Image (cartoon, rainbow, N blue to C red; front, top):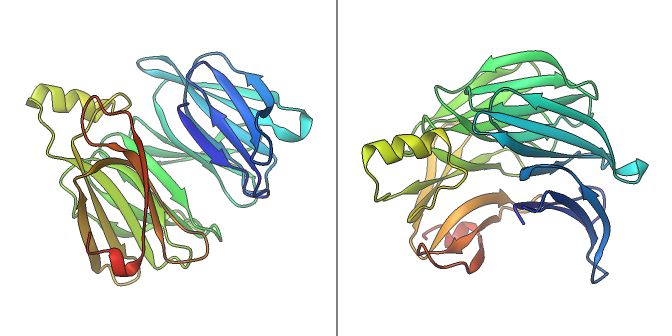
Length: 276
């Protein structure tokens, strides 16, 4: 499984993007999947629209080309749109109305597209290299992005202007999350990488198969720009972070440290445990 995502409208429903090119919808109350959708290509990312109507999955078709497929959940899992991009698609999300579809790209841009046509509406030069990740706030008014340039940016979606920039990290940002109250932004990067400069440059261009050694999590207050806390994850390699949708809790997912260790790890941190 490459990634999974919960249905934002149903606490029992989730979807997984398999490396075998399948997209499967699951009901947590049942032992097997309830729907299997075949989508050609190597799955990379998956996201579910905020109103629960659509699932989007991105696939790699070449080293410089990706395809995004949109599945209509209401139509039995029918693929209603397939869009090829001449660049890498790293992150995807909808706005809260499902009228716009946003992606972050290997060109360092945020591309805003009209939905369901997936027609270009706006392209924003956001980062100086790959823009790895994005997240939109629960009310849809803020968008956070992180990139290979080690910078975290927070955008006001009403005019798509950058309202805050954080540049405390020394390595590319891999995952990002906004707190439910829009007060904090958290980001994670990999550190202590035992690589030559050429190897590091290659991984910064395409981090999809990268194997890290340690991870650092940084938490900042958005309104003031103040740094809140940083801590290093030395026991496992953090690959994704997410704030709880109703409480000030931060979930961290990854795998146990070590190149040969395939054990998955999930940890949850509260403000009192931000000491690391």
